[in-house]
Length: 204
Image (spheres, rainbow, N blue to C red):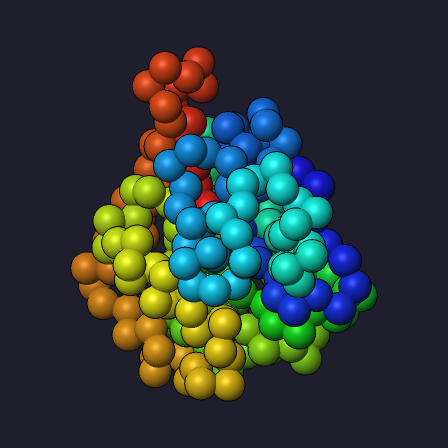
């Protein structure tokens, strides 16, 4: 899955790994039930409701996308902890080279594993990536029942006004119920008519 990147972006979004759907399409966050594109627009991060194929417009809005892990998997549980940790190191190199102003990992569980931060909450983190501020935001998958669309927009809106957002635990307050929703989001999420049965839309 190719990165959508340029130098000096305002924001770099970091998914976990491609689903078979996104891998087949060659596009990030391509599953029809994924709410990322609507949430970006609702939060004021893009001027229009973009689609996964509108990469030029996304870059024009100052936003890029990468993944912690490039390997597509049928289930998110197939992404190993060592792959997530290696992805953390690759992300640091990418951020150091491209210098986006802010970085956001879209998935609490993956962030906790990759950064050895088991108690991390959604929001801005004390950790930085290659000197850049780092946020953790909820998974935008349609299966993330703990975060309804309106709450996702509210969480992502912190990136539209970064100076107003706090550090970890001050603008996320992740609850046990939300944790469970995040875990559910990493189960199967495939169109019943699609031939990729058993696949999922993990985070990207």
